[in-house]
Length: 295
Image 1 (cartoon, helix red, strand yellow):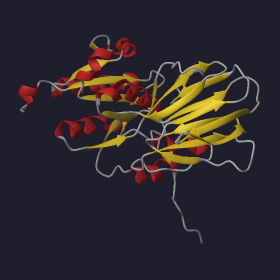
Image 2 (cartoon, rainbow, N blue to C red; image 1 turned 45 degrees about the vertical axis):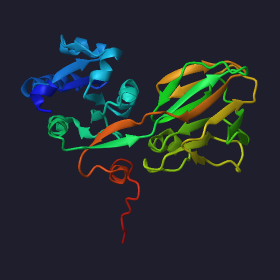
Image 3 (cartoon, one colour; image 1 turned 90 degrees about the vertical axis):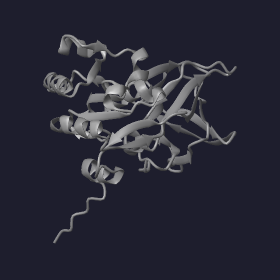
Image 4 (cartoon, rainbow, N blue to C red; image 1 turned 120 degrees about the vertical axis):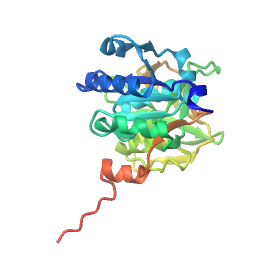
C-alpha cells in the first residue's frame, strides 16, 4: 500500500508536565509533523501546551500507528497501558535522567521518528500482567494492566503482614513481610530489583514474586511460569492494604480480599533501533556488569 493510499500516519502523544523542556519538545514535534505530514493526537493535559490539535481519546487509540511518550519511564508505562490492548507500538523519548525503557534522548526525537517512518526499527514485545482483587465468594474487582509490576503492600503503621502465595492450585508458601511484588521480566529491573529480586531478560516469559522486607531469612524471590495464575491472600486482619500498579494506579483493598495475578493476553510493543538491546541498556543505565580493572 502506498503512502497516499494509507493516508497520513497518526501518532498519539502523551507527556509529563513535570519536565521543563516539555513545551520546547512539543514545539519541535509539531514542526516535524508539519514537515512530514503526520497527524498528532494529544492527551488532554497537553492541549494547554500546544493550544490546538486533535484530542487523544480512548476511542482514538485503535486507529493510531504509534504512541509517542515524552517523559521518563513512568510516562511510558502510563502510555503503554492506554494502547496495549490495541497493539499500538510505543516509542519513548526520555526527558528525564534514567529512561530505562525509552528509546530516544530528547535531542534525538526527530531522528527516531524519521527512522520509524522509514521502517528502520524493530518491535520489542514485552509481556504484561493483568490482576484483580477478589472476595471470598469469588466477586472480582476491576482489572488492572501492569507492564512492570503489581504490588500488594500496607499503609499506615510500620508492621509486617502475613501473606499466603498460591500457584499450581496449591500454596507455595506463607510468610510475614511488608508486602509482595509480582513483576514481569521488564519489571525485574524496577522495584523488584530494589527489593532483592533477580534480573530477568525480557525474552524469558515468567512472573517474579519478590517479598518486600520478609521477616525471615528463609524467604527468597521466586520465579514462576508466565502462564501460571498466582494468588496472594492476606492472612493478617488489617484494613490498610493497597494494590499498586506500575507505581501509578492503585486500589484500596478490604479485609477478606485476595489478589489474583496472571499474564495479560497481549504484550506491550516497544519500538527499538539498531544497537538497543536489553543488556546494552542494562550496562549503560544501571552500570550492570561494568567492571573496571584497577591497578
